[in-house]
Image (cartoon, rainbow, N blue to C red):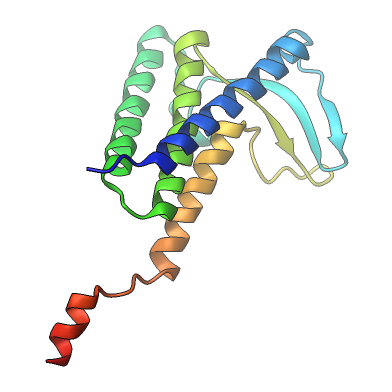
Length: 170
């Protein structure tokens, strides 16, 4: 069996960038100690620290040690499923997408294990309207990976194997 090098490398890069960005936000910029004072980088983008104790859309809040570790276990099982899919996947585009999902998930799991919450910091807004919750690079990687998988599932048709074409012509 051939190793899914593209997917594993993508997962490693996504995980490293996610953790590096969170280190900059909490360590170098100290946003976690500045009482939530946001930093405007662009008219539509600011960074601000949010300790996210839940998962997507603030669901399944982990407000106790038991729920924290249950959430770690649940997301770990999902990450293992993505890893198993990645391990069997032969198409490069799908490996890349699964690597993004896996790397982002591992970054968020690592935060929850180390800190008890996930560090979120990216706040995209248009005036007072914020179409997204505050997120991090791991969340962005997961979202991009899922969108790539969906686009490939709906828009990309695999070419039939040569053997199948020849059999149909006979």
